[in-house]
Amino acid sequence: MELQINGQRTQADADPATPLLWVLRDQLNLTGTKFGCGIAACGACTVHVDGQAVRSCVTQVSSVQGKDIRTIESLGSAEKPHALQQAWIAEQVPQCGYCQSGMLMAAAALLARTPKPTDADIDAAMSNICRCGTYQRVRAAIHRAANSVSSGATKSASNGAVPKTTGSAA
Image (cartoon, rainbow, N blue to C red; front, side, top):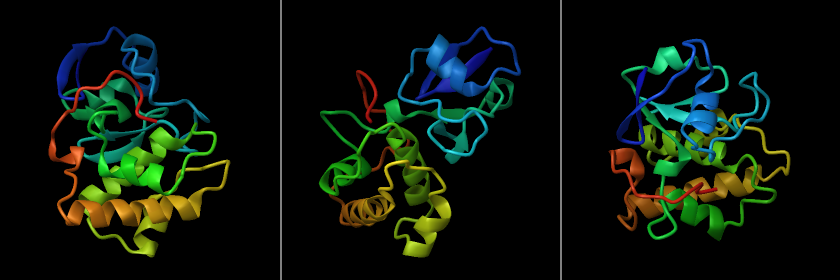
């Protein structure tokens, strides 16, 4: 089946019921998207499908044919990090780091639809689980990134730009 991932068309040879997560990781070597729970509870596997944050561990690959799929690999690069990646570092969000790619993708979807989120907006959108408990830092980083983007300091990858990357951004 043909998929549109990070701005490029690609072929995947998978059973239509295969979770998108496994096609991304095992067939396409996009390993920034993590497996956490397999039941859509933790959010480590969050990617964007047509701009919406979705849990790829429970999303059948057949349901995303013809849709725009974005993974953490498209968010930014070491040379040109996304405002959220910069804010994540500035606020020292990562601890173990395992949940971070899913957190960043959920936060990017939030900022794409709500450029100046309130604490309540952030709390409602960020249902990802961080076992290290960095939720206050996540909130601070999202506010920092929102202020950075609104000031024009950094453009968001959610505008359709696909930066070149060499691996996982988180």
